Length: 590
Image (tube, rainbow, N blue to C red; front, side):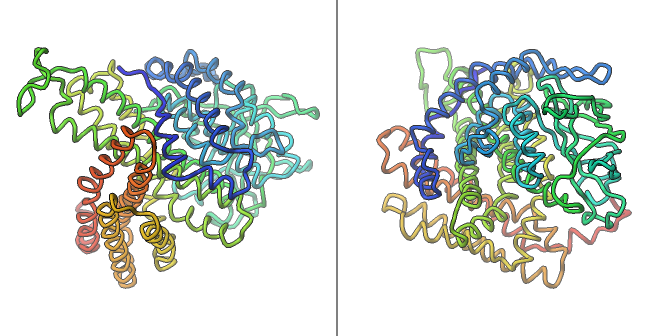
């Protein structure tokens, strides 16, 4: 079983050559961030992950968390690794500098997130949830709450969790029953039960700050009546230190398919004291500030674990001896050739790598738009960035995780029977990645968001923004060596636009067209986005000094265009079949 190694060289290629991140940072006025600073951050983060976090992954999966008398104990080694993570200031990397954060751009922070998630997804969920909670507090809470909570959350002294789902209310949060009663001191008494709360209780931090969705007594019906409340495990005293225990407790932890080393909790609130975050009845707005962050990081989780699966599979393929090459022995001095010589094994490994490396570039690309939306002083650029984030976020969450799962299954398949055995580690990656397709809004919900709100509602206007950028890049940057790849992408983009027009026309007559086409449409745009990433990689490869890496990138770009991008033809044909067959089956026939 291969030890996880951070793909540092590829991250640097994407940042500095493929996506020109330092120029983007400079344009946004982030003068303190350059390639030298970025390299120092990347190298130190890689060292922490490889030495302290990744070695925990296998044993922690076996041990899991322990739940005794309402207390959750994290797996052995997690507390120490969490302390190292906090001591290094990693939880403050993207935080607001006014409260002790470092203010680093998301396009850089996202690569560190991949390292942590690739090293151990269960562990990585803890800082991920804290960062998301900090983002919502910073964007929506009062100055008093920010000053009291953000510094200690950035430092890791206090952790964060978000409490949305209830037993009867998942996607449809308008059905929640958790209620909030106003108190005379301006706080609220929160009562209700939340489920599937990741790291809702644990022993790694001294306090846990819950962001809880609840309804006030005068709340309107449905989602318009949701408010968000900050509910700490321990209520800080006047000096900001830990005070009395709040009435929020873990009722149980789930037994799960994957991410077994993280605690997925049932949380009970029994008139727990909380404070309103943002405006009353505007909790969804605050929640989506957090959720959009989490959705990108969930995509990053998938890429990180799929990268670990690839490394494991590639090492096994180089070492496992089975049979001879179909066109004669490649290693005649050995009793058999490594399975790497066989075309089908190469198909699996190349597919994994083509998907993983495109996924890495794509999440950094989306993060660049997030940076522009946050830091740009130009209102026109900021609006464009916000629109691009709106379009790309559901693709980043769903397409990255779906393709990461595909890659992990291929990595398991490379091992044959050994891939089904726990000791080799491949089955864990499959189990862990599976949740990324489900939480933070299932991938089907992401597809409905893309085709409904982000396409049909605006008559395809957001897609035109992406198409304009891709066409502009082809016009200005493509070289003679990459012309064929550019033509592949142009044809794919044209097909995507034609398919979008078909959907808009068909859905105007039959709204079921949207649901019937949603997942295929998201995949179609996802393959186009990955194609754009590979074209940019191939163009960038022509100007780097590392000729071996350049050749690898060029070959992988050609492989993607020839072997994976043609999936668009099938997807477009499926979409054009319409909704009639899907919707004709009577309910009682299922």
